[in-house]
Length: 368
Image (cartoon, rainbow, N blue to C red; front, side, top):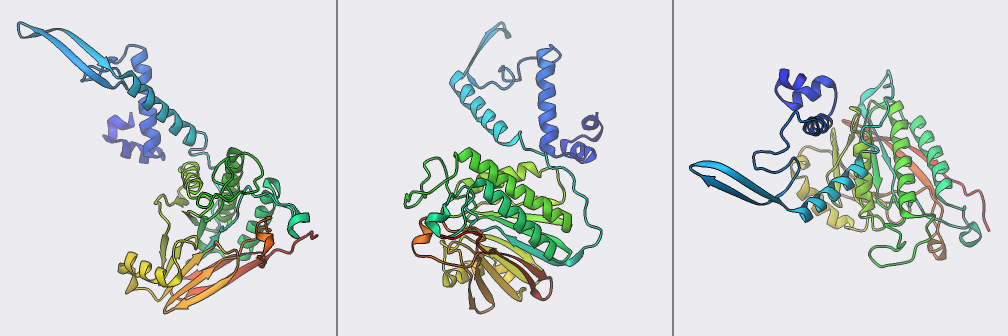
């Protein structure tokens, strides 16, 4: 009714408070039902059934009139296309638009932004304290740790109008059930099958975003790939985009690539895993990729992970910071690396750049 009244799917979707995709899908389902009941013709203008792929069409014309027509469809192509459709349905429909409303906070400062970096979380990693001289770790313990960390960090931040949450950058420990690093094929210690690990990681990210929505007016979500999860980080981005597609207060950025950028007032923020480019290289990359911002900004902050420890380097107005991780060591890391476990939330002012930081240090509960 709204489509007939307003003329476009976009206008109908806006009136209903739905996405254009939701409206288009509803109309497609309605069309199929009408075809099955004989209310619409089962063939389109090309002579193919609804959703069919024409391979060859033959028309018998006699006396200037169409006497008979034969339409052959490509069954193999149809089956392949249907398989792709089903895969897309499975990947998105179970979570699409399922986010529940969270009441926005009454007081917010739109001149402030809070940054939360979920780097090197290695969800799915399994470690044994007898071997690592650090805490045990598995999927259940990851959920418990991340819940404590995000609750404390959000509570410690001011009522910033906006939050920026950066996931990926080895958010997952293993890419698939081979349980090897994609590049060098090093064996990884993993707790469970890849599908179980992925679902757990998605829920950790969703719960973190919900906590931010309680404190901040809007949440911007960025996902950057790591060397452990170059593909599953993209899957995480799609899952979060689908889940929060019905929430106007959450924006999931769906651009892909090793670098992500965001401009907040006089500060340009950049994110990458840390294995793609060194500080000197990043200087060239940033000034090239964001040349339009370069003459207007006062500060440029680059955040990376990969080395699991804090490290700061300055080149001109660009500040490069490697973020720590709150998770314990695995067996491989315990052979030579030691670093403080921590998670940070950073406050930015539109005019003054970085103005505050909340730090949650993790003290191992068990050793030896």
